[in-house]
Image 1 (tube, rainbow, N blue to C red):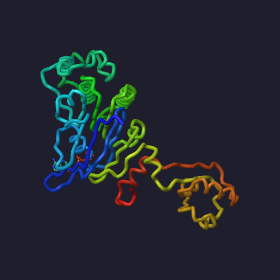
Image 2: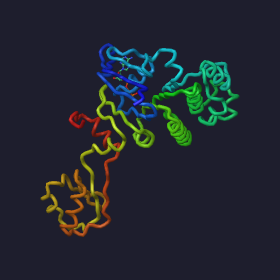
Image 3: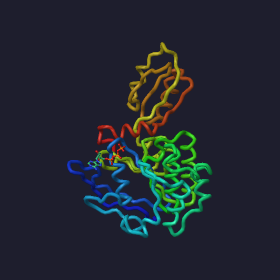
Image 4: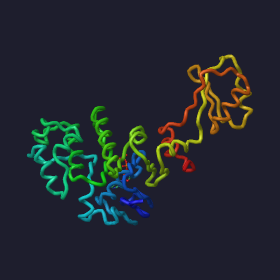
Length: 300
Ligand SMILES: Nc1ncnc2c1ncn2[C@@H]1O[C@H](COP(=O)(O)OP(=O)(O)OP(=O)(O)O)[C@@H](O)[C@H]1O
């Protein structure tokens, strides 16, 4: 693997709080990685250490086999953080030109416009007059200005409307196809599921799951088979089978929870209960998230 980011036994403690606790992982070239987790899980602290904005209390962060703050590393990184602050007194085009001038191989302005959805009108506007959503587009353009190899976003789509959000993910998809490495934190599980090839799920400063969205979903032990059946029909006999963990009725359907849905289907036909409109539901990412980040540490 062509290693772009590596964290080795990284811990970050503030006065009375360990925000990140002995975390290790590596991210290879071209990976699109979502950092997911509930409030206070350590996502922003981890991203800040990757960016060299915070120094680990222990352990080591390396980007491109160097320290995050080294110049040759900075030139290869683009970032968009939660807080969008813009330089006052400058037009959008002037800010973009200025930031582009810091990089050896910046992207052409026209390409930045196309990638981020900034309009010609936006380019002529004083940056401080932009709306929240337009400021995020500028911030996205600034992140891409230096044609970075590694792009890091902290909750990138907060405050974006649906159109901007879709456009943002389209651009990310396009950048990923070009082999860029992308790391983003999000609270939106669906975004992680749709956009990331890998999810690092954080809880209490530690990684509780690391895998593809499907692998993480597959870790939900219980899946369900649901069907419609005569409401008078007693279902108790199904409980005799050890593979069935739970049975309940909801909105005219019967749901059977089990970790072996193939066996449940066999049983339904074997018992001849007249089940109709049978559906199998795999766990959703939301459920995996709940299960993996709730109190039960043994879920890992
Ligand atoms: N500068 C700081 N001083 C003290 N504690 C901090 C500091 N920064 C973060 N923390 C604490 O560290 C923990 C992790 O915070 P962090 O911001 O990394 O979480 P997060 O996963 O990004 O949360 P959110 O989803 O709410 O943004 C939290 O308990 C937070 O209160």
